[in-house]
Image 1: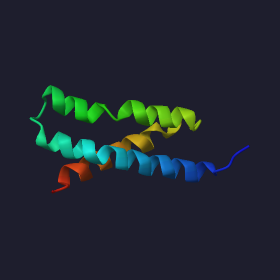
Image 2 (image 1 turned 180 degrees about the horizontal axis):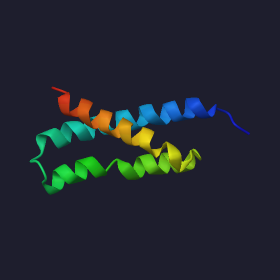
Image 3 (image 1 turned 30 degrees about the vertical axis):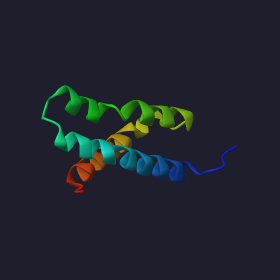
Length: 82
């Protein structure tokens, strides 16, 4: 029994991935390159995104789409100015 069509669910997870990565991209940009914090800011959102993908029962073949969303979120977050 599906409540949300699969394409809509993939789009929602894509947007979720972008927005989760925005603050981490902002923090990553301000950390020293290749430091522990820099590495942590890149990889910390990954378990959350994996959990959302598994709980929503989206197949592993859509992972490249979510990797693209992570890169977009990190890049946009790195360009944010406050």
